[in-house]
Length: 320
View 1 (spheres, rainbow, N blue to C red):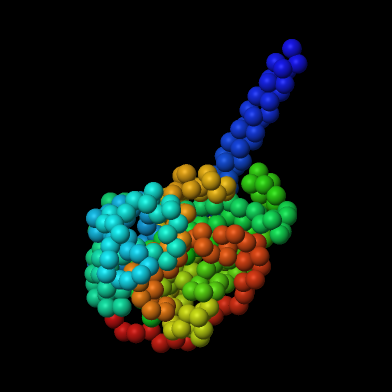
View 2: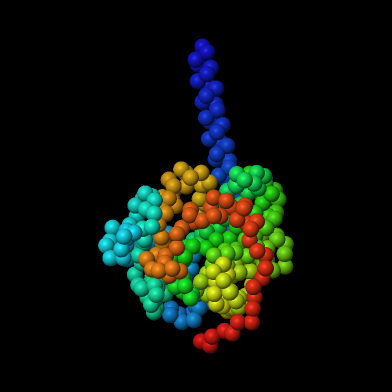
C-alpha cells in the first residue's frame, strides 16, 4: 500500500512540474508577443540600389542550403560539408566557419541579390528568449535576436547577429506581464545603448512595441532616425545611417526555451560555437552566434553595463 501511495505522490509531482513548465512557456510566449519590436529599415526600392538589402532572416532558410558550406578551422579551402544542417552544428564546432556565396571583403552586389533570393516570399524572423540571471535574483530579461546574412559596413563580413533586450523587475514571466519593463538595451557593434522605459528617445507604437532603427548595412540598433558617428570598436568606426524613407517590418516570432537542453532540442544550431560567416582576418571574420555572447549567459549584468548616451552626430551623408 505504501508503495502505491509513493508512486501516486511521485506521479502527481511529475504532473505538477510538467504543468508548471507549460504555464511558464505560455507566459513567456505571451510576454514576448506583447513587446514584439517594430524593425524600421532604410527602404530599398530595388536590389543593389541605396537602402537596406538585408532583413532579419529565418536561420532555417540557410540550414541546409546548397549555397552554404561548413569549413574547418585549419584553412579556408577544405570543405567539411556542403548544405550543413542545424543538427550538424549541434556538435559545437568551435572556430569552424559557415561560408556563404561571395567574397565578404569584395562583396559587390552578390550578397544583396542572395538576400533577396533567400528571403523571397518568406517573412522576416526574430528569436525571442525570456531568461533570468543568477547573479541578479528578482530580475528578468526579454531578448529579441535578429540574424542578417551580411554586414555591409566598414567591417564587411558574412553573417550578422544583433539583439535588443527589455529588463523587468520580476522573477517570472507571469510577474513580468503585470508590470512594465524598467530599461531597454539596443546592441550596437561591440557595445550597446540603453534607455529607461518611458524615456523620450524610446519610441513605442501600438501600445508597448519598441521601434528599433537598424543602421544601413551594419544593423547596429538605434532609437532614432539620424546619422550616428562612432569612434571606437564599441561604437563602430564611421557613420551609421538610419535616415529614411523607411519601411516597417513585423518579424515573425520564434520563442527559444530558457533551458539549454530544451533550446538545443528545438534549435540545434544554438549549440554551434563556430562562426556564421567565412574566415577572414580581424573584424572581417564571420561573427559567433547568440549563445557565445555575454548577454546570453549574464543578461541583467549586460543590460546594466550599457551606456545610455545618444550618439547622433553631424555626419555627412554620402550622395546616392
